[in-house]
Length: 212
Image 1 (tube, rainbow, N blue to C red):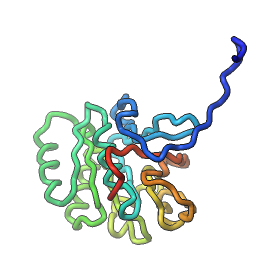
Image 2 (spheres, helix red, strand yellow; image 1 turned 120 degrees about the horizontal axis):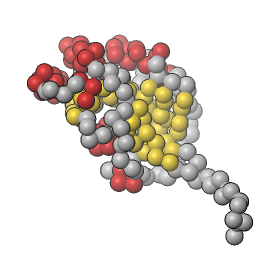
Image 3 (spheres, rainbow, N blue to C red; image 1 turned 180 degrees about the vertical axis):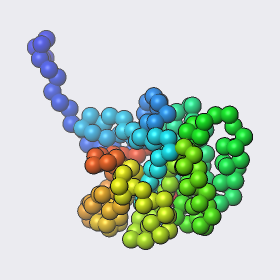
Image 4 (cartoon, rainbow, N blue to C red; image 1 turned 60 degrees about the horizontal axis):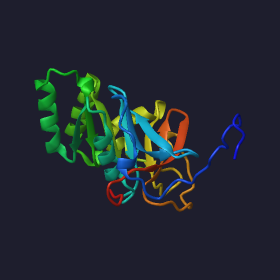
């Protein structure tokens, strides 16, 4: 046994291949959402999504983008009105709800799957929502034409905030300022959380086998 005054040794653990959403603690504020585990001691990994911000979820098909969106929606603070958008038709109820509510726009969190496949009018609607203070989480395929397919993504060049899942090429995370070796094999759900210059490797929580 250690002497009474001795510090406990620093424990180092490998990231697990699977993380259950139930194993994470609750969100402690509207700005921070628990999404998985990271670090040598497998601490809860959170992402920051402040009002009027854009959080980008990048990854190839089958990398877990949809699962990541569901985790953010599931774990978001109870004060937020979290809405999942899977197509242009889903945006109309969001806009209507924002117009009818007495709550401030920053109390709404809008998560958009396959945001880069939306038509131009939908991108304009998302820009209006963000300008009003709504928090946006947009999932898209990486690639050199990303900002053409998803104009709002240009914001993260100057203020990186997002997650890169299962990169298939070294330039997949370039817009977030991240370059990784795609030859390194990782389990589904392994990701890189980015905020500004800080990059953390993490294992994202998923209720089912990661997909999307």
